[in-house]
Length: 516
View 1 (cartoon, rainbow, N blue to C red):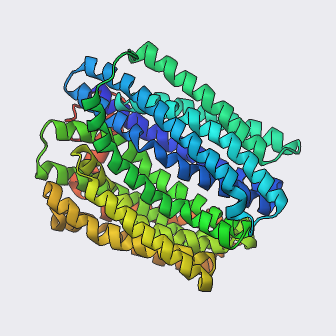
View 2: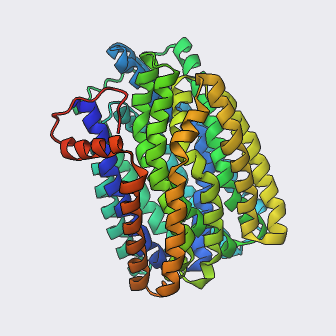
């Protein structure tokens, strides 16, 4: 087994370990944060987080470009070009970080005019203080993101996950102590900023020591700069579209309804962020490999086969999570944060259902990016999601915060279920019918899982944490057994047995295209 393939596999497994830690921290710690801050200040904290994330899209998706180009130069064995590219990226990030600070400063002075009608004077003061601290945080995050992308290009995912592990533990410990001592939301963002600086220093040291990172500040290539921006602009447009889904909704609700409604929507978005993160554990580790496949001339059959393998795996996982959440999600919300947030289940389930196709097919998006052909999808995504946010603005008049979820979900379904598949077929001759025939049968197991869950819930209501965990454990056991007996073919079961035995032994040779 090559060291790169092994790093990817260890990275995926360790990322799931990090995910479990973050889920446990979220389940245990989020209610404590909400209780310590109160619903109003938690809403302000979420609102400013959404605002900062909206400003952060001005990085133009350049972190993705760093991973893409460094991966390409590694495949082509052009070490000198890697050094030049990293040096050029520092100039770019300095310019972009300055633009972000300028945009944030303008927002700071316009804040009262935008949110003055829906927030109290005390809430406005807290929000502006949070905004000032987080602006500095996002400034340094640009440089940290560049080094992180460099490490990802070398597929050193275990190191990144190790740092993430210690960062999560440190954040939980410090924030718990501060909130217990009476400190509020400002203390949380200060802790995040300090940990961000420490993470950046560790990334930089590792890159210099183990990945031979060299920075040549005298190098500046206009032609390379133009090429990089022609690629990054489409990532930027895609990020703007994502902002329409996850951030603009919060900002609209904050400007029209108030901080408590923001808190309800924010809890729903928090659930969705975990859903996204679970799917991204695999997807985020595959981009360097996809880039190398495309660089080495993989044809439509290889790329479709790759998408099918990843799609089936993702559908088994994400479909199971969606099914579990459909049956037990409302019980989880009630036990987790209380009846004030029960509407968060409607918000999160509506959007998770609309997202399922994209999470399963995201390997196709990576192929588009590797081919530098993501422009049409990105601009369509921005336009359609923008209309979805506009539709949500009108729907909240009749449906409250759930109306925003309806508007955004309709936009997702139109784009990701229908339009983008036409783009895949056009760009890399995606064999759509073959893909559907291989991946869609997995849905049968999910419908079976939902049916079993509904029946089980009638006999054992999930009214306490013990009963809830008992229900989930029994249903997951049914699912895993069904997955093994009926979901996998005989060939797939054989491969899973081999992989389970050889994951860390290094005895089995795996081709570049055989990722999982």
